[in-house]
Image 1 (cartoon, rainbow, N blue to C red):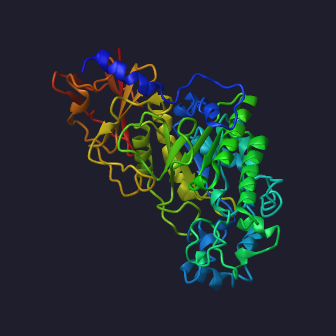
Image 2: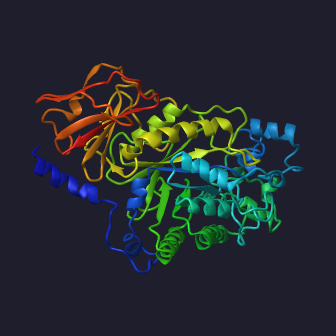
Length: 500
């Protein structure tokens, strides 16, 4: 394929997600909302954000963030643990964990410093998980951190610290699952997967107490809950002006008109505060015309023309702090992220604070290693775009919402990924393993007269983070790179191609 033909094919792909038609006011209808730029340039440049699962469910530090769901289920190990540790669910309910969630060591300045050091360009909390407890100072939800538990505005304090460091803010919402939609089903208590809290007429979750019903999502009608869902999101938007709203699965359970009201309110608030705001979601819960698709612990097999997200966790599989749960190693976390970046993705990385507000040393060490690597290799990451191919090698990500980016993928020096600077004057090659010093490597994927050659002729190749010039050779058949006789980076080695 000649260069002109390739350029013509590439233009529509590059323009996706880069709309220029801006609304002065957004209406809650598709024709208006679709004019919003789903992926503003700052978001595409950012590459890395950090959020955290933290709430009353962190107190037991057992099982998973689904503890409040599982403690009300019969015959499960969570129910057994709960009763052995805290007593009967009729005497000690989920609401009784809230006074124990004190966050006495929470330091928003320290957390903001940690996230900045790790290289995050946006950050924020899980504003509300499925459990119905709000992590902000809420007038809508009586179950909130300002009125009980820590008695501090966790979201507000952290946003203030982040904004002082010019870090964009994100608030994530998982509470669409909170509303009880299964009270009319006699056998719902056996699974109840369309509501977070297990329902049975004899369970505490079937309470008629007007305040406690809001925690358990047990409203008289689901229509009433849907408005409660929207009112909480709008309250966070109005009080804190987040740059990104992010939604977990089951947003599809909220009626479409409410979802469009949410989007219009968020977009209009962005206009009011001169912010290019973003909305992200999972599955097909919002139109991609004005929102970003997220894959949980996921990846893509190839480059996608639209920018996309993946949320991954430092825990081997858990999202909240669980005592003695193992963490992924820094190399697998970073190499997974590089794979995402090479395919037009952005990473939302989860950390797991303890109930007292401490982010433990194991997680801090991982973030420190990643941050140190990013300081050296930042130009190969932030503000870059994809090459015509993401790279090559035997390690394969899997399309889908779970498992594509996991601790099970084994990257080696045979796995190479690419990014390109926006001005196309630089190209970067990431080796997701330690290449052997002195070895001459054939990179046929970008050599010869193949379509994937760099955008312009190569002038020099350097080992990024050093002054070392690298021997290279471009032939009609292939491209050859000789690995310099020096120590390679333990996490990922990057070579910078300086182009004409």
